[in-house]
Length: 326
Image (cartoon, rainbow, N blue to C red; front, side, top):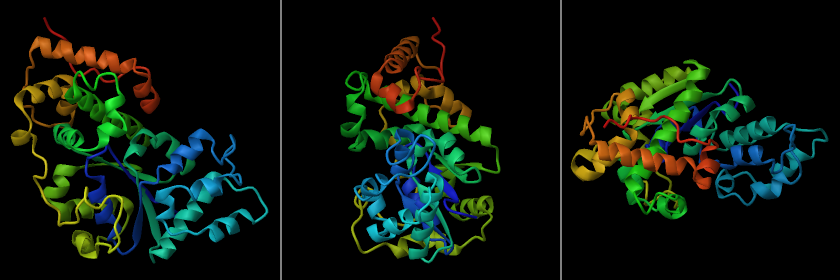
């Protein structure tokens, strides 16, 4: 296998950091953290020509990326890659960077964890046709609780047209759009390249899920995966306080006890169809007509929101989960 061997992805706050730490503890595989630049530079043609070749502009761009700097690859190594005197494809260049990262970690395999890559499975599959994808899915109501308690609104959600009116429905549709896009793209790849993992199952039966994960990657299961927290780095990271290092722990978010009844109805009116598809039990099996009408209004507003369209690259908020019934 050549790097990247796997992309771990999913809607933000679904537990991808936990999964990254678990997999990174395996003796054979290292997982880079939040390499957003991989897709962004390619899609925006920054340091990359339209036919996929690397330009000299890419080096200074990489050296300004915190996630790249954390990989521990210096400017001298980058310059050496560019001085080979022949055109380099972007996929080959990034593969070499990932291999260098693996060598620095004494690991033979390298993957990446970037949640938002759930929207870019097709692009990544084009760059690396044999790479595998693990889509971590978590109950959207727990994801919503975490998003609402996070600084995320300051970064994006608060700029959406529906945020002030109804943040709960906004995060419900945000979760739905990410999960649906990942499933649609992944299912086209088939089970050899695409694997869905439920967060709830991971924390309830971690050994079995880690073994299944290893089977998917054709790796031998490593018990060290369950002891990932023992190798906590001494240096501070960008995800330190927000993602504490602790053993796998269930119940960190619990919509049954932490989400208000009105919020539950709003969330399920907006994204209940996907909850049903995924087999998650509803608290409000039959939302009131006015709740369904409100959810439809929020969905319509987001479908025309330029920031929503730019993020998802689609005109409509897909996957209408309910019909408004009079």
